[in-house]
Length: 205
Image (cartoon, rainbow, N blue to C red; front, side):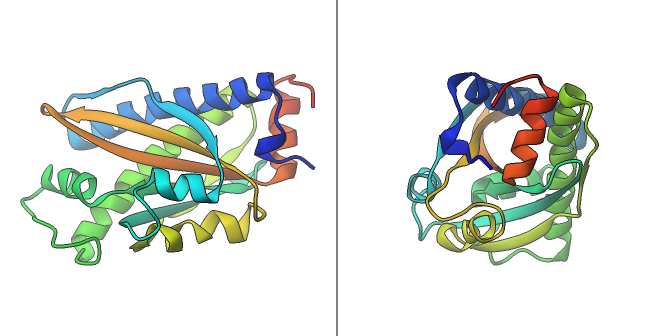
């Protein structure tokens, strides 16, 4: 059984490469969804514990939208997209004019737009992992949870990560129509799935 913080340097490089390729493909998918050109800076991929991740996302009391996507098939885990209010507003405004009062003011149509974004970008990440490993990687329907960062972070902690362990955090920096906006994706895989992933890639434990 392994955890992210016990990975060696080669294993860390593999996880970073998965994050980089997945983020690039997610950017392409997002560009198609929005029907506009999107530029993306080189994503930053790092391993962070709970407290560091919470601070990285603006602090425990920062209000965000969490989009949880279950990973099933040959791997078990989850992707958690953490969306700031301005990012959500920018995505929604690609389709219709809307100013969000808060992350809790989303109506049904707003939520549908963000769920579709999460579905498409999660699929891009999943396809990247599947292409690299030849494993079957399936994703579930996005579940949307607006709330404080401290509440959103309970999702990977309670389901797939033990207290004190780390998660893989991908910082995505996009440029849409000259506006710079950012988003984050957290990948949490069960220990057995991490072992299976590295075994398939020929990386020794």
